[in-house]
Image (tube, rainbow, N blue to C red):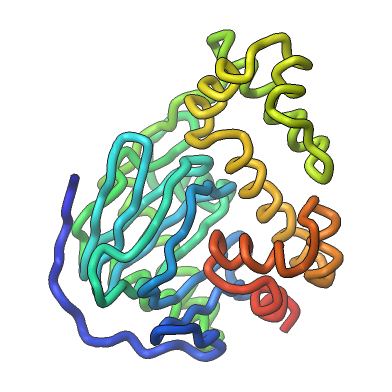
Length: 293
């Protein structure tokens, strides 16, 4: 286990629009029109834990108080005040409190296009740029990240965009490197990729593991092992995450939560609410509201 820092910090005050939660928790997951290709999250969690999931883009968060514990395939990392956590696209992970008081953080979710643009302007990295380290102690970047949030909340696009580029460029120069190619090479990886395609195409009515394995000419346990190796989680966990990702896009396009729930294969809106809140950190209604304001 890697521990960055376990220092305490002053309590973080919720920003405007933060959604109150139980046990003193609060969260705001939003998008600022002045920063295209970026989602923002400020939150404090105590009991909430994020199940295994992945993101289309990158995750960069600055822990501002308490301790966050992130579970990856290769082990668990912890970050306290001053700690930065960096996660590349499609990397499966969990997140939860690493101390009784929970943790507070400011998070950036830059798209692959945003990171590629900054990498192209400021580094000599070839291929797809990413982070070679998951956790680091870098209070300066932590300060930049919190200032990005403040600038965005104040509607200061010039400051927010400038600080975003400075923060990502510094992280890429210090901790960056080219990401490995994701081309499936082994037979198992190719089978897992085919299974993923089937689940994406039949998201609302997926086959059982046994039927899926039959369609792909393999056994259920062989498919289970191959899928977990390729994507860091079993097919049913990946499917729940994929449904939430698609629901996010539908909500961003203006769909009501009940409509999005049916479209992605959840039985009803409460089913969507439960999984969406666990994975995204805020309820679907609050997520949609922040994108229609």
